Image (tube, helix red, strand yellow):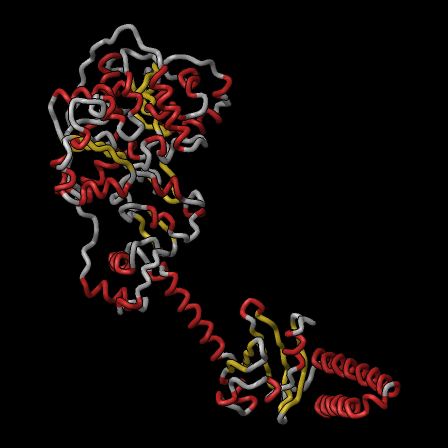
Length: 559
């Protein structure tokens, strides 16, 4: 699966939490048998599921083997390093580390960012900037009617790769290194063929350096093999970086005519209405909230504010080359509406899915979002399309669990009786009613109305956590197990009729142990009775008679 898909599921780690469904902006996750699988043709490759999965069950396909093969091939290989690198620890040592890995030319993709900004302005193109491949993918797949607002200019990655090959020679290979999963899919677009030979994420680069035992903190600080001034283009990883590079925020046009935004919600809102997206002369969207510095495969542990500060500081202090060679490269591109991969469903199919989970009535729809979908109707639509399962609904599963529990209790051959914290009977199953010839009309009464309450009383007083005995009542000899549900303040009794069963040794041991306990209690009571006869005559006599009655009953039925 992961050999073809940009983002794939590590099935062994997927724990049925639906967090990836919740975070995916286009719900490109198919749930099957509780496993969450990314549907590659629906996926934007934004990597949100990779970043958010708590079990690391979502991963980005690796390009490491391909890059290593390029280096072994003997071809000279150049590294195009995304400007978000400056947010990494020891960023100034990265060029040296890459050269140790075998790259013969190491330069900043920001040069391509500056190039495409200039191309956009010189063409007098207006609309939505297209540096972010996840944004382009979203429009192509989910808002094809909005393709006309996209400025047909390639991304900095493609532009820089073309510039490098034009400058260094056609025999060179170019490897892009950045924080983005969508770049892997962008490099494989037919219209971009021949530009980027392979894509690595910063996370993959970190793993590679570790495998080669290259400690970046031990590498020397060194400059990139840069040609020409880059300036503000190093701000491209931040919201508004392109506009800043083109001088569009500082002046030239009014602030009301430009907008920069980031995050799936803002991007989707931009394209939700053509009137909104056409309102601005330039709109610069980045799919990751906060920009490329929050890409799913950036690595490092800094918070977004520290990353932002590092990017700005580097842009202000990076060395400026003396000359700027002019190398031309094609900057134009085109975008294509993708096929609608969603299976069409009817209202009847949706209603059937709602009915299955008990939500056909709108009043019964909690819209809790626990399944990962915004509301119950969206979930039902996904179920009808085969993208989701009814079992994803937590309230539905809770009802099912309760129904199964009820069914188990109702069909148990043993009697079951439940009492509350006041030892009032609140539930009994059919087997219990048959055993003790009673009905639901006695519910609400104290358990002592029907049975010996000793076990329940001991549990209530926390003298024991489980009580077992063999008793006789109403001509029925029964085995009793009583235990507590402390969190619910309830006590459960389970009863088996052993009136017609010949006692085996184990059962006799229970009877003998119980008899011995009662006998000791009887003897102790008689001693106290002799000592305190005057004060306790009435109470002692009554208690002694009760104990004697139990002894006689036990012996009568154990023989």
